Length: 121
Image 1 (cartoon, rainbow, N blue to C red):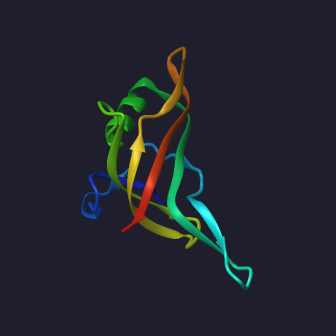
Image 2 (image 1 turned 90 degrees about the vertical axis):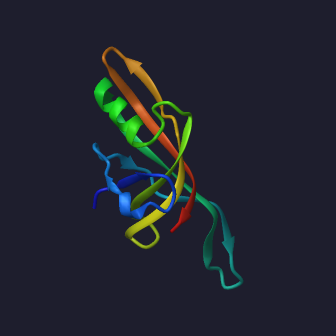
């Protein structure tokens, strides 16, 4: 399954594969609630991190454009990723932040795009 992205919220019709697939840290929730029977429920706004070990300058520019953060510090996007709870594709309305990265010689290394405020569509 390829992760997909589209500009704006509720834009499932515009979803397209991300040009270079990230290594995604699992979808995490803000808090966990424990029921009386001991079952743990995930609660709150979800977040995740899209990670790249290294990117060329061209790849960084392309991905920044796809994620809507080439000229802004954050963007409203529609994201389709695998949900670790359902183990199936799930669509989310998300905010994506400009990446954290280190520029080393001609490569961007340890690139992380923070995805937060994830609302299931």
